[in-house]
Length: 84
Image 1: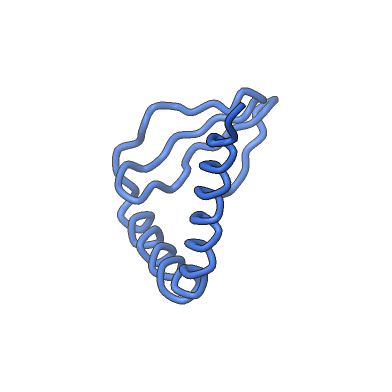
Image 2: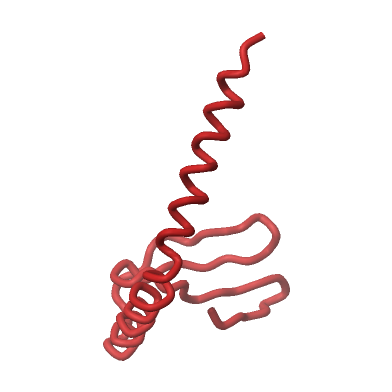
């Protein structure tokens, strides 16, 4: 039996791992701070329209702002709420 599937999986995993390593500093110093600022600006404007409800299957649900992708209206089991 061929191990091509396993070799393909290992190759793809190696690519993902290398991508994470190469992008780590950029994400930490540029991407995440800029995304945080963008989401704060969107919140100040009142967020845009939202997506359909998402449900994780264990009692939590939410929707997203269509402009900045912030999770909104997070509700959990028995009416619990959580800040993102």
